[in-house]
Length: 215
Image 1 (spheres, one colour):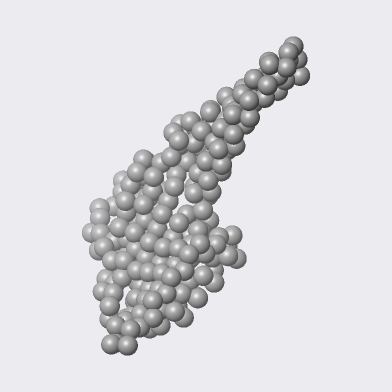
Image 2: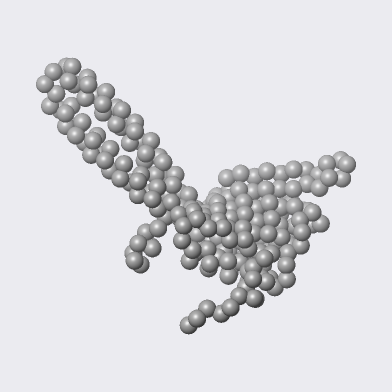
């Protein structure tokens, strides 16, 4: 059972909403720990303050390795008041197994067709084998691309940080954002299948009121 748990393929996404003094400047700081940790910034959007006094904002979409996610989230607390954090996890093990099986079957089919090409008795048979091989190779490349994308989503968590001016985002709850994050993160890792854990504001109180786990 332990080996089966270790083989699970899980796609995790996280989002955070933070009240900061200057969203554009804070956006630069959000990206600083991502690339050194092996991640990347996929998208960055900034909205300038409007002439009538409307507040500006910024949003970053990053991909972060699993082992670096907690550190990056901790960095968010240094930027301002973390109003809300959510983390969701979806088990895609069945999708990965299915893609692996289909890739393996197509690789076998491609190998057989290549053998037919070498021994085609007639020109017509050769043409038919070439057409079938081209089709199978196209299908194989498509499935391999899908599998690589799925592997990337499993390896690199998606983290979206929404930065809003102080006074726009509601203030975070007492007890410490990271305390709540730690409790919620452990619960997320232990959960099976699809799950949604709301962290940051709610969990400091939930953690304080939860009964102790039996030894």
